Every structure is written in C-alpha cells, then in structure tokens.
Length: 398
Picture (cartoon, rainbow, N blue to C red):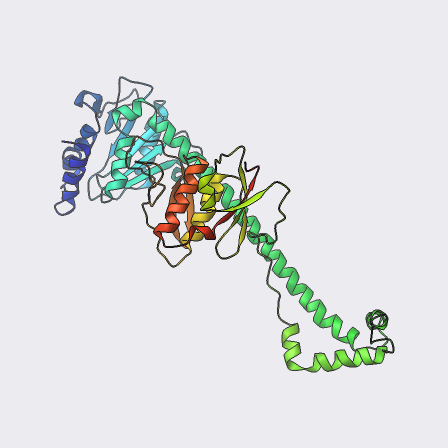
C-alpha cells in the first residue's frame, strides 16, 4: 500500500481505536513507517544499550549517522513532556540527535541538539486527522529523505524561521515601546499645556503674549494691536466649551510603517503592476524601493520578496477573500498556502510567514522578481482588484 493508502487506513481507527500500545504499534505506527520506505530489518524493537535502557524502536540502526529513535504510546494515552524527556535522555546517552514521539494520533519530532527547554526541542508536530500534515511529516521521516539529510535540513529551516520570528517579535516590541513612550510624552505635554498655557495666554504681560503681539504687529492689518487685545482673544477662545474640547484632543501618533511623500531619486521610476509585466526585472539591477498600495499608502520595501509580502498583507486585509492555496507562475509549487507544503512534497520549501488578522499564511519565497510580479498580478485579478492600483518605485529600471 502507498503512504496515502496507509494514512487513509489509519484514519479509520478514530471510529474504532486500538485497545492498547501493542495494537497501536501494529495497526498504525509500523504500517506508516513501512509505507515510508523502511524494510522491517531497519526498524529494531526494544534494543537495550549498555545501561539497560531502550527505546521502543530504533530506525536505520546500521546507518549510524542517520539513526533516530521512536517512542510509542497507546492510542488513548496523551503525550506528555515526561515521555519526550525519557526518549531524549536515551538519545543523548547514545549520541543521537532526533526522536519521534507518537501515540498514533499525534506525531512529534524533537531535535536534541537544540539548547533550552523541552518545548524548544519540538520542531514538527502533525496530527493523523490532518492528511496534509501527516503526509508531510511522514515524507520527511521517510527512509530516502532521512538518508539524504531531511531531518537536519528541516531542523535548520525551522531554527531559522524561529530566529526570524523572534527578531520580528523584538522589532514589534520595540515599536510598541516607542509608541507607548510617544503616547506617554503626549499625555505629559497635554498636562503641561493645560497647566501652563491658559494662564500665560490670558496674561497681557506674559512673555508669550508679548512675543505673539510683536509678531502680529509686523503683519498687515495688525499694526496697532495690543497685548491686552491678544490676551482677551485667548481668554474668550479658551472659555468656549467647543474650543476647550478641541484643545484637549490628543493628536494621533504618526504611522510607523507608512511614510508619505517619499522623495523619488533622479533616475527612479514609478510603474504600476500591469506595466511592470512588460519590462525585465531582477533583484540586482532593478530593485524595488517603495510600494504604493491602492488605498494610497506608501510602504518602503527592499526586495521583490518584500514587495510580495507587503502586497499580500494588504490583500489579506481586503473584503474580497484571498484564494488559498494559490498557484500561478510556478507549476507544482503553491505561491500561498495555509500549510508549508507544495503539490510535490520533494520540492524545496522556502516560506515567508505572513500573519494578518489572526490568520497565518505561508508565502513561497523561492521565486524570481518577475514571478513575484506575475503572482501578485494574477492574485489581484482573481480577487477582482485592479492590478493597476499597485505601483512600485524602482531603482535603476532599464
């Protein structure tokens, strides 16, 4: 049976579960491993080490650089940290890196090389209920993929993604802290203004009113103005309820992500998404500088990946639904998907995580600038949004 067939067969046990750990292994876990390319002789059961400890299964025992362990639990047993800790301790004692923990329903892959808490070592989790998830994980765990280094590759990719997420979280924290400081300073200034300015502006002999009077006296029509008339005007204005309400209004904070009236350097050009389809672009000789969205916002971008990410972020916030999964310029490879998979599992997976309104979307980044332009153009058409609404300022456009 194929892997897909075995997954479908295993999913039937949700309605008639295995009764114990032995049944779980024989009916669910082992069939999935066999379908993933492991001959029976390359799955050893309960082989003890020099200390008398042993895992439930040792995978690829003869290929010592690729050997990993699998700890099995009964179908109805919830996976706990203590189960993973037991298996990871065994792996650490025997100089191995990867451990799989499963009860047949839930599969977890741990990387013992990661420093930190137990939860930090968990790199992939898949549910048997989710066909796409379990298919991707069993493909990663297949004999051919493991021998080719799939576990190390996925561990590296996930490590890099977590590092990027931590970096983005830190940047977001710094932005929030900056905005908090700005709001606090505005409140402080508002208090200072309310306590200081009314008395100064209503006092005809205050330095502030005298300076205002001097400035006005130099303007046409104000040649005979007096400090008393200036202070009287402020007194009447400040006493008016509507004016006081306006004076106490806190001004909005400047938008951090959008810069308006961005200057255009000599030689740069602004082209809309449709016109860009007709010219050659790449990341070196025609670099994007600024994205103009259909609602008039201007967003600085540094690369074609950055352009695509910001365009997708904007589209995800529109009322028209974004079609996901979405594929256009690259056959067998999704441009946007809700999971980190492609049509063909063996294709290289390079994704950008985009989170908008509590929704997470994975954008394929293994594309050229031209392909990104084609993908966003096609996505606009699919969503019935005019592609011409997107414009891009490009440095060094031919």
